[in-house]
Image (tube, rainbow, N blue to C red; front, side):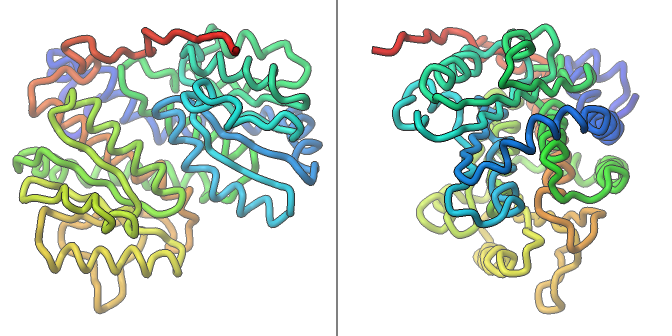
Length: 387
C-alpha cells in the first residue's frame, strides 16, 4: 500500500505504517460499515423507533476527545431531521463534562437516549458517564457505537435490556495513536443507524479516493512551506469536524503546530489574532445556501487581508465573483449534499496534511508523543464517587 507517494518500507521506517493504512483504507471501510448497519437494521429499528416516538425524548451524543467531536458533527443534522417537537432535544455533551458535572448535564425526570462513541470503550470517562446516567436518569437508554468487541463499554452494555451496542468492523479499530478511520467509521455508522440523509456510500468512497489520488502533490507542498499554525473553520456540524481536524494536527505534530478550530462567524471575535505569515487556514464551506453566505464573507475577508494562506474545501465552484482559488480543494460530491456528507471526505484531507506535517518534523505518527504526555487510551483519570 502507498499513500501520498510514500512507499510501505518508508512508512514502516518512519513509524507511520498504521496511521497511513488507517487513513488510506477509509473509502473501502465505509462500505463495510454501511453493510454492517444494514444487517443490524431490524434490531436497531426495534430499539430506536419507540424511543424516537417519545415526544419529550432527550438524545445526548457523548464521547471524549475525538469521540466527543463525532457528536458535535451529528447533533445539528439529527435535530433537523427529527423535526420540531416541543419537548425533543438533541445535544452533544462530552463525557468529560458529564463526569465532572453530572447534575448540570443529566436530567433525572427526562427520558434520555445516551449515544456513546468510543474507539476502545476503555476510557474511564466513557464508562463513568454510562454509570452516572443510569444512576441519575430514571428512564435512561444507551446506544454504544464502538470499534472494540473486547472493550469494557461493549461488554457492560451488551446484555442490558435498555441498551444496544453497534459494534463496528475490526478495520475501524485504529492501531495508531490518532483516531482516523475509527472517527469516520463511527460518524457514518451513527448517521446510518438514525437513517440520516447522506450521499450514497459509493459516492463518499469515490470522493475520498479521488482526493487521496489527486491531492498528494498539493499536500506535500503544503507540508514543505514552513507553516506552524493551523486554523480550521466550519459552520454548524462542520464546526465539530473542524475541531477534530485541528486536534489531528496537534496530536500528530506532538504540539509543534498550534491548531485552533472555530466557526467562520466566531473567528472574528478574538481568535482571528492567531493569524500570521506561518498560518494555514482550512475553510470547510457549507452546502447550506444561507450558511454559505457567511462562510464566503469570511473567505473574502481573509484573502483580502492576506495574513496566512487560506484554502477552501468545497463541493462546487463558487459564484463567478468568488471563484475557487488555484489551490482550493474541490470535493467530488454533489453541490446539494448535506454538510454531514462533506464531513468524512473533508476530514481525509486534514488527516493527510497532519500525517505529512508529522513526518516533516521527524515525528513517528503511530506514536507521536515522545514524552508520553498523552496516551492512546487516556490514563491518570480518577473517578470520584458522587457526594
